[in-house]
Length: 430
Image 1: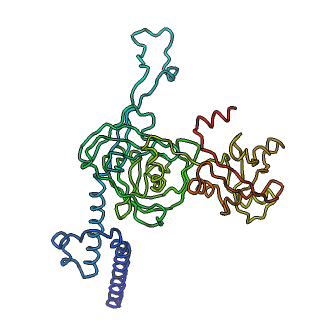
Image 2: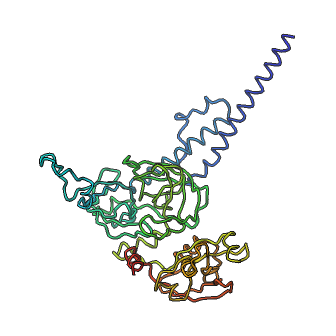
Image 3: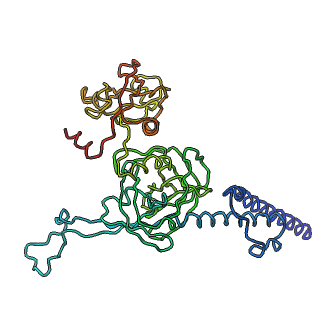
């Protein structure tokens, strides 16, 4: 009986060990299957003396080791190619302390020698990232990196430091262009990709200076495309934003997000975080927007966006039922209209006006936009994207509406130029 029990124990043990090996090797191999496709022009894996596959336990494991080596080499190639094109941006900003003096008040009887000497202004230093756009010395970064800067310096990976001139910035897209006086032969522009062709799951690599740690590389994937986020500088939103899980932290702002070919697909701009550190949700301005905006900023001009002059929200099933529309109706409910804006001039009506007129805060009496120029609109994000990518100021567009009385109507609106935040505030005050 004892021998029988021992034999049974041995069989069970061998079975468990074999099962574990199969699971481990299967997961290991599955995770590496994507390796050969990471970089089409990747160099060959390191020679056998670096990874001696002959010492491994079987040909399958040796092949997996070779795949790991190829994967590592592909990432090394990407970093070494992009590094000379990536820069560290140091900014100095003047802080006016006169408005803060109330926070430093001392009792009236405080001796003069104990009264703190508060300067009228002091200087604060910040840091961001950027990359070389062309051989003429243009550097691209985020607008919020250089906003209100009194001095800007660009540091290259080889230690070269150059003063930079801010040629222009676009707070709406969170983009800015700098100019440095560096010999063209020392500048290595990064090739630009096509963000419209991105697919979820593709490799994404971020290079920048997180927390002041110069020239750091992090990797991940494209987690989502077509996001719409607030610019952080104005009330307006950036469409077609790339979401990535490649770790992005403060200091990465303005740095490039590149694909497996070493092409820039986005400019890292924001993170979604509860504590200010990376949580696996980062956002990058798509390079296709930068292709439109950057040349304008290089000329010292302001990029002009189409403006409809409304605020709205996506029509949900519950909201559709509240305003007696079929539950499957798609569109955007017009919440508010900017006075004397394009939509106001065309006779659109917002829900907030209906609420004020009736005193009913639960009333949604605004127009519902269901299509623009014949293209169906099913969300506020879709409307923002269409206006940003398919129209220009001065264009006349046809809006298909459902009025508050439930009747369909088509209205022609001549789009204006998106105003600055100061102009918007002034219009609201009036």
